[in-house]
Length: 249
Image (tube, rainbow, N blue to C red):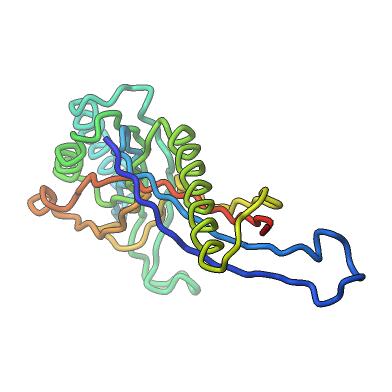
């Protein structure tokens, strides 16, 4: 299921040479420059998630044991949500001593063990249950939630065609108002977009995290009893922007 939104972002410029015998033919011709944008909204068919587990204790073996225990419960919860083993992997592991004053190494607090798990959920409708279950298992951070589509290239091409179509339609309309007609396209440029698969990652905020998706940015708390209403699948917005220069006749 998808929705298509056409946004007309039009910049028009007509360039008429005032010097009949200088410059190239292209420099002297009349032109119109139009920018078009198209947005294709699609439902995600998979979700990548980064989960974090942080534990600490003054004894390093105890800190590791606590982390391992949470990890075991978390993996059981993940597999219980239907995530295949091949889509689960340890993403990060660190063990670090902490002091009240890290510079002088005074007043030892304990050893902090941080572990994170990267998973891919191929049934986005199960995300709320999965998040609830892993938080109940002891996960302390949600580092990133990234909604994706496996058909991104196809939808990107569709958005690009629609953007070109929108640009041409607007060029025709604008030229008509000025008593002109458009000719062949002289130059076509595509405006590059940001990386759609980027996500937030970091160890900021004990017991909470941030989630990023292609079309949604929302805060997520670390309490499992409030998680059921915090995640909305929504739609992924796949954009294309083009600038086209047409000859005016």
